[in-house]
Image (cartoon, rainbow, N blue to C red; front, side, top):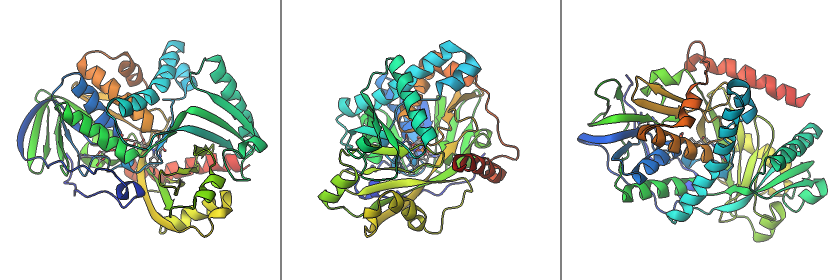
Length: 429
Ligand SMILES: Cc1cc2nc3c(=O)[nH]c(=O)nc-3n(C[C@H](O)[C@H](O)[C@H](O)COP(=O)(O)OP(=O)(O)OC[C@H]3O[C@@H](n4cnc5c(N)ncnc54)[C@H](O)[C@@H]3O)c2cc1C
């Protein structure tokens, strides 16, 4: 079904360099049996594994590289609630479905926070997050969202800040207003992912790393194969997201893998850290190709952005990110970049994560469209629920029709790039 993949170690990111305990699980050898086999050791797969292990299932997880090797160990670390835009769900599936997805959005962030505390995962969790407006129309959007959340009894403290007040959060002249949310925040994603895998293993789950799955057999006798082993299971969970590629062609054509990139500066003087982000919040702007930034626990600026839909890694990540970082923070002109890296996200055309089933006993979720740290944790729970019996949420999401792209993902990127260009032009006008 798929070609052999070559296993690799972590990309040279700030997270890999500062991980408090990198995982070293063996590679799969020989034949194994389990209730459930999970393919992919990012947040989706690890979260599903931990939910299943907590319920007493015998789970085997196969990761092609290392736990957290994909987007989960490389991302901005911004813990942001919300699952999907409930308005879109309401239009397609009605008000009850919208209520369920709204609650999923609140709960997904809570799963992460509860796990960190339950398993004492050391991953630099800090609360405080700000959405930043660059244009008047975005200021109006922030006001609307704030009012909507107040009406919906949103459970976390929120504050709308005007330009002057925002200086207490972001030391930059770039933004017109901000919406602060004290329920969201930021963390070290690779340490979180590895910590959750360790928690699952402590409950009896079995993890194999450096074990790319090359063949998946659905149907009566489900099993997955690597070059040196095989796992038989009653159920298969596919959690490879943007990296699953040709391993399961039935899924590849539904999503577009797009690149997002990050830069970590050298450790900044304490005074400068306080000037740039006085309250140590995570920040994003509101454009479709957004800038996202925060301080790391050791005082670096972690700057991300430049989602690229062409599938091409820029020749210089620093050269591409530095201008936008210095536009917002001219104070960083002389700050050295110690790390630059990128990762793949999976975009679905309607920006709704894709839940589904292949031949009865293989389940998958993919297509978080760049906002996945918290949603993957809900997806893992929903997958565990469906394996265990019923899940209203899984059934609800699997009703949503997802258009694929003609020609499949290998031909799709130019079309998507054009579509994204349209939205960016609209923002500029
Ligand atoms: C640079 C960047 C910044 C981001 N910032 C944020 C952010 O701040 N906040 C936020 O909410 N979201 C963010 N995201 C998105 C978020 O990281 C993802 O939505 C989320 O991590 C997806 O998790 P996942 O487990 O589904 O996929 P991944 O983490 O990509 O994991 C998939 C795993 O499957 C494995 N795999 C694939 N094929 C096989 C196979 N054949 N056999 C075995 N294993 C296989 C891969 O090796 C990989 O480890 C960002 C993403 C990127 C790239």
